Each structure stands twice: as structure tokens, then as C-alpha cells.
Image 1 (cartoon, rainbow, N blue to C red):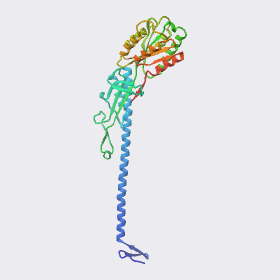
Image 2: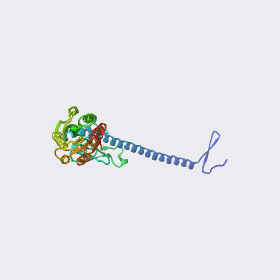
Image 3: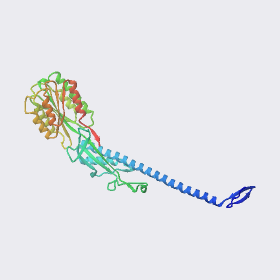
Length: 361
């Protein structure tokens, strides 16, 4: 057996053991290096766990802050729609925010976190744009914050050292729009509407009120009708059964004064809710040609100057489509034409569905 000059032999149970000091030192070195490597891996693993926990913590904070801010904005908008009182809207939004937890603490808002203004729909994109301080006020923007300057303060981080900061300061913005409208129906009851045409108009108006009853907005509806002269058949009311009752009372006779019908509708608006909080819409319907009273386009300009949106409906082959289309353009509304009772009903239903909506940006 070959001996090793750097080793010594030991005899145990007739076996030869070669003990080599240099080999023992190498083994110990390898074990030490492995322990250092394991320690580095363990530290990296713990760091990754810490960062993962912190990221989940941050994501939860963002989600809960978004939920609380959305809830506050919606609550404030609903209160604004019902009471038309900004201070009450702020109180309601603040109360609802505090009922929502953001990382174990209620979201505390102050009046400066609320903005009130007007939301208008972009016809091209279908999205609503919020304009602070503009009227009519129909939108509430809420800024929910967990920052050093907010009432709730910043969010403490568990392992801030890994992220370079001991706090997290998220913000969320939510805008809710609740469109309340005062709607005035102006309908033609001249002699040419007698018989079947009047019945088809009445059925269309019944469908209009039925459709409005199923929408979330709080529309108040009034009605004026006209022939040579005009009458106020129902003042603005949230009770749509009053509009149905006025519809049943319609009787056809006389000539056609579209402008006097519009002026009667204008009087109805004057007894309605404040234009500061309510959109105003007039829906003018005729089956014929204007032949009495002032020019309807002049009445349309006066109404448009008061921010009244005017939709027009022509019914049947004898209706003055060019003039009614121009009235709608003046009033920033739409013109519709119906050749049958079914189309007339579909038009009134379409308008009813477009009148009120609640949304959040």
C-alpha cells in the first residue's frame, strides 16, 4: 500500500486509516463557503418575501382607497340630486367614506376633498367630461387621500427599508354624475290630430312615462299642448301618473301654433327646480305646419339662451320637417321623424332612455 508523506496512519481494528491534515482543512473550507452561500440565498429569499408582502400591502391599499372614494362620490352625487344642497352632499359623502376601511382605518375626508361642477357628454366619444364650478351642478369629484397632509395620514410600510421609504401615500379620484332633468312635453292637439293620430300620440306618451319610471334618475315632467292657443296641462311633477291623466284629457281641434306651445312650456320651467342643479329638456311634437302666432325659431332661441335643450318630433307626411329640424339645431337637441304610430312610440321611448344616467369616472 502506498503511503502519503503528509499523512499519518492509525491502526483501528486491523484497518489502516490515513489522516491527512490538509484534506481536513479543505473540507472545512468548503463547508464554510457553503454556509455563507446558504446565508446569502436565505437573505435574498427573505428580501423577496418581504417585497412581495409589501407589494400586496400596497395593492390592497390602492384597491380599498378606490372603493372608498367611489362610494363617497356616488353618495354625495345622490344626495346632491335629492336635496340640491352642496353642504348636505359633502356631509353624506364624508359619512360614507368613513364607513369604508383603508388598511384598517376609516377614510377621513374634508370639504376641500370635494369639487362640484357640471359633467357633459362628449357626443363623439360618449364619455363625460367634468368641468369644476360650472352649472348646472350635476357632478361631484372626490379626491381620496392617504397622504401626510390628509386627515387619515399616510400608510406605514412593513419593510420600508427595501423600498427606500417607510410610508406609502396613495390618492384616488372619482367623479359621479347624476343627471336630474325637468322635462316638458309640448304636443300638438290641432284638428289634424283628431282620431287615430291622437290615439297613437297618447299611446306613445304612456310608453314615455312608463319608460321614465324605470330609469334611475329623478325626472320631473310637465306637459303643454297647443292648437291655435296653448294650455298648461300638467306642471312639473315627479308623479308621472299626473302626466298620464293629462294625456287622457287631450282633445284635437283648431289650427297650429307651435310657438305658443313652446312658450307655454317655457312657463312650466319657471315653476320648476333651480336651473343651477337641473338640466332642462323640451320635447316638441307636431304633425303639421305652424300657421298661428310668433315664429317658433324665435321661441327656440329664447329657450336655448336659458340652457334648455330642445328635441323635436315630426309625425306624418304633412309635418314641417325642415323647420322642426332647425328648431332642434338651435336647441342643441335632436330631430326625429315618425311615419307611423309604432315609430312615434319608439322615438318617445328612445328619448326617455337617454334622459338620465349615473356614472363614475
